[in-house]
Image (cartoon, rainbow over all chains, first blue to last red; front, side, top):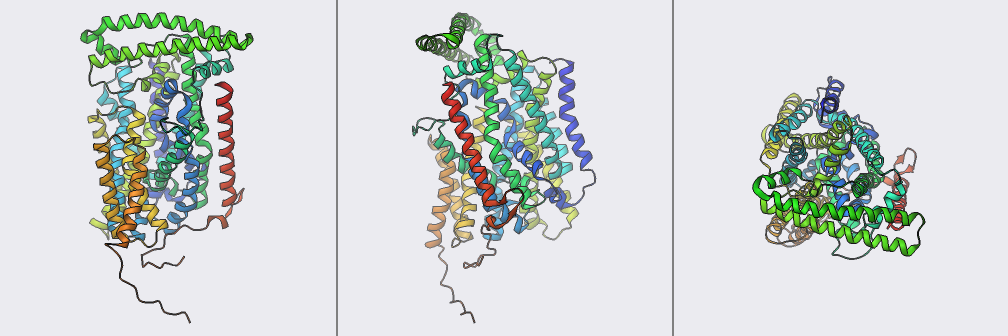
Length: 571
Length: 53
């Protein structure tokens, strides 16, 4: 990065919060701080919901995911449109009608205080840790590649977001998120255009797609019922539905976004916008990764994208074996490049048999390259047994740093940090609101003034920000950026969703039964997580089903209500 | 809605289908259009997959 990149980066990161602070300078009421004065239009809500969900992982890791495993990941979002429709039809009308500030207030009104506190507590644990990962994830990669000090990167990125979220509340989160999404869209479009520009002049966009397709990178939909496959239409539609229903219906970082709508209709339109746009957006992000993959069919990629790990291995005396692998890798790469060129020629005018032969050669050589990479990785692990990060997390940012012109490099680094800031801002806002509304107000100071609650929400928002920065400073457990967030969410979302589904649909189940059921289910999920190897997405279902089943069971046995007196006959 | 279990608030889902919605007439129609658009997206992705694989 040069001075021009730093100007673009600093400008993009600072200008948006400063503008947001200026726009919200007159706000002073608790209602405005917590719900944006319920004045936000549907378009802003739609972008805000999208920015909160996306986070840095979407734009840093997902192109790398496509580079390694193709487009199949898009299927993870196939349950989301149905979940968002369910949220619009069931959750939004209730929240607006009851005029709640947080989702957990509803649990208090439907059940009792302890169930409300349990739902809020589970949310606070999960999101408090997740906020730290959201700050840590981009900082660890970008600081390693650019030689920045990790702790300083975390404190600067975290510090900016803590300050503006604390000062501006919900409204500034929504305002900044829409402009941060603008930066993100512009940056990703520029990266996509540059990837196409970097293709050889005789390779068209369609031919680039054919190359990717021949190496199984474009399988976006798989209707097979193979349960061993990680991504299929059915796993995405069913598993993704429960995950999205819990996330959008019961996670205050999202509920807070759409409760800021000027009306229930604005909230629903914002969510419906995401129902329609989410899958195409993820497809576009993955397609950027696929184009990067095609570029690296003609330009030799590093054998391992995590260059700091390679440098460490060389420093520890593993330079010779890595150099040997690199030489073999280069030879096979040149052979494959010739095979890819032959494949493109065969596609443009050759016979079908010629195309099949060329494709088989490309696939064989690509398999050989993957084997060499695995062997090289084994050397890296030998050099650093603590090597945890996945190489795919480094693919996109390596492409950006090596292939984009100055100015755009700064813009793309701004994309990653903007995504981190927008997701963190929503989370901190939700954590501060929930702690004040669900814990401080009912338990500590039930009869204080609105000004006092406003001050406390700001203090608690800042407090959660400091905790998130602390988690980020001490985090060294992230194996993969995508998986870390999903695992953490899956451990807690099931129980939280179970509470809400019982509240909506099982009217005969009361507070104590559902409270005990949620505690037991949450403990069950944690025990299973630490003692078995069950795939993490299943915990959403186990936690949710546990609350429902135990809740009904306990209500009909231990906590059965005494028979009520017959209701008076209507006159 | 009428509660029968003695809880503090009914909190059940309301009936969005009857609510007037700009552009779409009713929420039921809006949801149907969203699902139809999603179906088109899946069909396009399926065609994309088969064309280039």
